[in-house]
Length: 301
Image 1 (tube, one colour):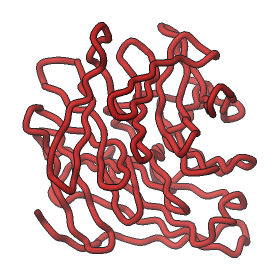
Image 2 (cartoon, one colour; image 1 turned 45 degrees about the vertical axis):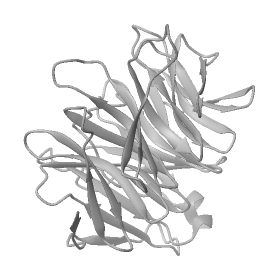
Image 3 (spheres, helix red, strand yellow; image 1 turned 180 degrees about the horizontal axis):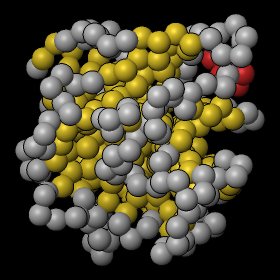
Image 4 (cartoon, helix red, strand yellow; image 1 turned 90 degrees about the vertical axis):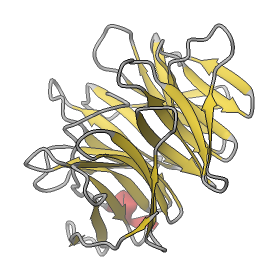
């Protein structure tokens, strides 16, 4: 266990004469060459970092400033992607295989559990989101899944031939749909048996990554540009996230008025970011830039 303090710049941005401030913090794991933040729950953030030889996970408590390194004992790399009430989910794998295995890590007991699907389902999946006892994700064959305890539900959206569930909040699931073998795709919102398209206007690809109540964050692409941009959607209004001096932005998690993700600087170094909007009601009024991500290592658009 290691403790450290924030040492990187905090940028306060005033946008378009709107009386609200955005607090944008850059976060790097000490000694890492790249850092990604993928999930947030209260004061705790989860993500991964590359130290020059391998990719490991981390948990960081912003209040106590305690950093915990997460490395599955049965894998070469570990990618924490979401957390809820002390449980972290994501994927692990080996350097010799492209097969991913979903996992749940229980921080209270420091224990790991593999998410093994039912017999007959290919064990190549990632867990992308968690809310309480419900875990969602996607399989290598292009199916979304919902896992509650030992109960697996596999489903697809009505909009494409393949999909992945990326985030969950209560009874609401957000994810992406696409057609296998075809570039592009869009987002979906699933509430029970009700499906809604979620697509950034003019985008060739839209991928919702996380949801908290009515707030949804994610990524999109325009035309042939492979670099992702990011968005915040509050159910009625879109806020587009692009950081100054960054090539692209990947917003992966939202909790209340805090958004987390990663951006890439001019030297193609990946950094985590934490964006806080002091007044949640101001979210729909803001048009602000954040950062990018040139080195996409999972959840590929």
